Length: 390
Image (cartoon, rainbow, N blue to C red):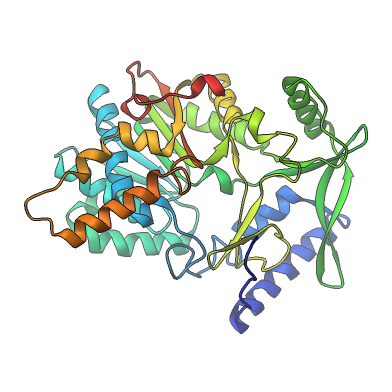
C-alpha cells in the first residue's frame, strides 16, 4: 500500500497552482476537455512549469525517485561495455544519450569508455529541459573535465547518426492515451476543469484509439472486461521511426520498467500501469501535485519491437536488467582489486544486489536492443534473450 504523501511546500503549491491554471486555460480553449495525453504532456513538459522543465531536483535522495545509474556506477560501466562492442563492430561512431537526467550516467559511461581508451569523438545528449542541461553540464565539468570538448547537447535527433543510442527511463515518460472499456464501447479518458480543480472525464474514443484497442483485443484472443482501464502510447511508432530514420548504422538500447503486451494487458492488470512519484512515494493520481511530481507508465515492449520492425530496424534482443548487466560483465567490475578495502567491496556488492535481484530492479526493469546494419550477437543478451516473448 502506498505511503501517505508529504505535504507540498508553499513554493511547490504556488508552482502547481500556476500550472493547473495554465492547463485549465488549455482545457477551456479546447472546448472543456483535453485528452490525458495532452494533460500529461503539459504536466511534464510545459515550458517553465512542467515537471521536467522547471527547476526542482528530480533524481536522487533529494528528489522523487532514484534511477539505476544513481544507485551505482556499475550500471553505466556495464552499459559502456555494450557500447564498446558495437562501436568496435562499426569501427567508430558516436554515443547519443536521450534524456540524460542528472548527467550521472553520461559521466560514468564516459569515464569507463575513457578508461578502456574507447571514448568516442562525440558524446551527444538530447535533452529538452534547459534546467537539466545546466545540471548535466555542471556535473560533467566536475567529473570528466578533460572530455568536455567531446560532449554536445542537441535540441533534436541528428539527421544522420552512426553509433550507439542509449536511453534509461525515457520511454515511460512519453505521454500516453488512457482508455476504459464500457460494455461494447471504448472510451478515452481525459481531463476537465471545474472552479480551478482538475477532474477526470471520459468520451467515446476516436477512431485511432479505438482501432488500436480492438487490435490488442484481437491479439490477446478475448475482449477486455467491462471497466477495464489501461493506457496506450500512440506516439511510440513515430518516435521510434524518427530514431530509425536518423540511424545509419549502430544499435539503440532502451532500459525501462515494462512487460510484453500479453502480460501488460493481462486481465488482472485492470487499472493499467500508470504511476506517479513524489519524494520517493508512489501513487496513481496524476491530477494532484501537478508539475511537482513525476508521471509515468510501464512500457509495452511488444509495441516498441513492432515500431522498430515497421521502421526498418531489427530487434537485437530483449531481456531483464539483471541478465543484461551479467552479459555486459558486471562480475568483472565486482572482482576484488588490490586497493579495495572491505567497506568499498561490501558497498559495491549491495549496489549490485539492488540492480540485479528479482525483488529489486533486476526483473522489473527490462532492456530492449534495436539494431541497424549491425549483425553481431550483442553481449547484453548473451545470457538470456527473451525476445520470443514479445
